[in-house]
Image 1 (cartoon, rainbow, N blue to C red):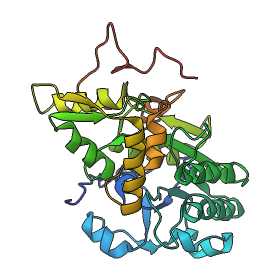
Image 2: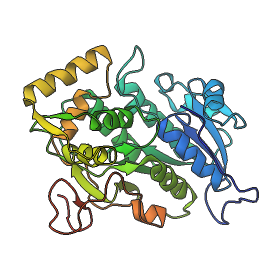
Image 3: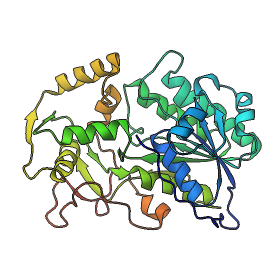
Image 4: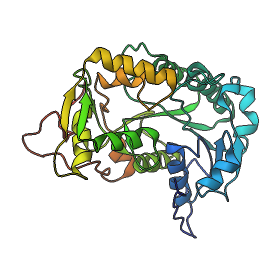
Length: 330
């Protein structure tokens, strides 16, 4: 992937009275993080990028002029471990997440214990902590991926820090592992879909997510602490694939119905061999709605979110695509 273009006005200054002037973005060279970094810079904030290999990643994404701090979350399991990393910062944004475990990088360490220690460190120093989580964690889950995300959120709530949790729905954008695969599958003439993948998603643009998080960092007194974010339209996975395909091909794809048991088996195989972004955790999420109950994205952006795929029909809408506002999710 090429460098992320960042347009920073030469006279950009953060608004008066905001809580942030120096922001540490953990995972700032990743898919979500680099859009957060770009949005923060465009608002005139000083940004420090936390990454496993900060200098190499910063050069790759066009942030070579930014300071970087090395961060291995699987090693940062005590509040004191974070002392050097958060020094001199006003706000910390945690965009770190792992799709699959590798050695000491376990779900429990990266999604739960490290964020808990970070929250304790932020509470002790009076720093705001913005933590990127995911939708769909309130329901019982079997996958350790989802359970670790849930436990990480619980630790933040109990920390006493100035915490904020951001829960986006599925993300679209250049450079994302999952987004790239979804776009690839959408172009296929046949879409293999299990009937169990009936949950609805509110796909949103990763650039919008970056802007929303930057605005949250600037807000002196956000009205709520938990922010569920989604795009303009709700679709099933099948509906989203059809919408993306319609941008590139005039003929719709044929749907191939595959058994749920096969989809579950494939998810476990993908987890075992670390291939494709499809995982058992994703299979669980696809079986239930992955939409915000109250969409905070327009309020955080101060505008309407970008539309992903072809516009959904405004009248006689079907479950394949309809505006998110008219329906309250339970």
